[in-house]
Amino acid sequence: MTILVTGGAGYIGSHMVHALVDAGEHVIVLDNLSTGFRFLIPATVPLIVGSSGDRELVAKLVRRHGVTAVIHFAASIVVPESVADPLAYYRNNTMNTCSLLGAAIGAGVKQVIFSSTAAVYGNPQTVPVREDAVTAPISPYGSSKLMSEIMLHDAGKAYGLRFVVLRYFNVAGADPKQRTGQSTPAATHLIKVACETALGRRAKIAVYGTDYPTPDGTCIRDYIHVSDLAAAHSAALRYLRQGGTSATFNCGYGRGASVLDVISSVKRVGGYDFPVEFHGRRAGDPAALMADVSRIRSTLDWHPQFEDLDTIVGHALAWEQILSRRQHGAA
Image 1 (cartoon, rainbow, N blue to C red):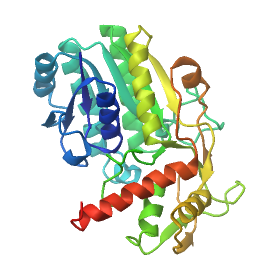
Image 2 (image 1 turned 135 degrees about the vertical axis):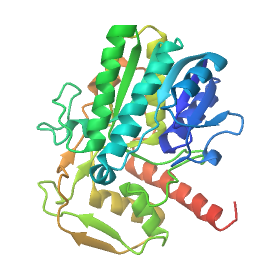
Image 3 (image 1 turned 45 degrees about the horizontal axis):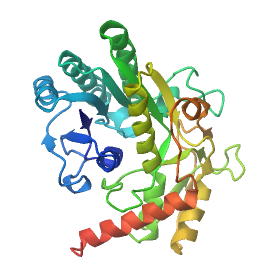
């Protein structure tokens, strides 16, 4: 039994690949390397450079390697970019997912785990947000992911496909063994930006909005350690293998940290000080976004290990230091 991981050379996908290899699974990676890196995955794992939307390639890989399950990460993920170029997001996220599903199902795959996002909820009316909340995305990115979820539901009914949709909240941190981490240049994730600022690779960090109805006036988000997220995918795979029915789960911890909490944690854990610049609110940012995680905790065999914010930040800082050494030729 082989697992095909699309986008497996990217941030979250590479953590998944390491987790699968650690568990003794047979894995192949399909990645176009537009935002991924070969050095993030084990040297023993075959990397096929190509598009998840290449039906012929996907079908060939499934048959050649005996693929029984697909974990689909490959996607574009930058919300402002999706607003500026929506058709690119519908092409890369939605149309490529359609092609991938068609090829995989046609070649006999019956199990798919799909990387989705809390962006499908838009600005939820109730927080923490449950999986059965109204889906009302406010960006083409969120819409492109929701369309893919709809395709999975329809494919399940028509072709007997069983799937798990995992809706991520704010993913952060890095592999505790320091084998992989967030490596995309100019990434927009708050914890990565704060770590880069702490290490002097950015002159300052900007905070957008200090007048939200939250304890310190800044936005609150539900941060989940990337290794715990990979473990959620592993639990979803076990669930499907044991005959579990198709399901959707939020991936978070059910509690939040504010922007200022994150900045304070980076300063505290790293022992750094750095400039913070305050600006007005950005359009479309909800004051607080946290997951209701009762469904995933009651259904999947998932036991997060890294829920402490300082732990998440510590692993992220350690990875940024590794990247700095790589950039200077010391690693």
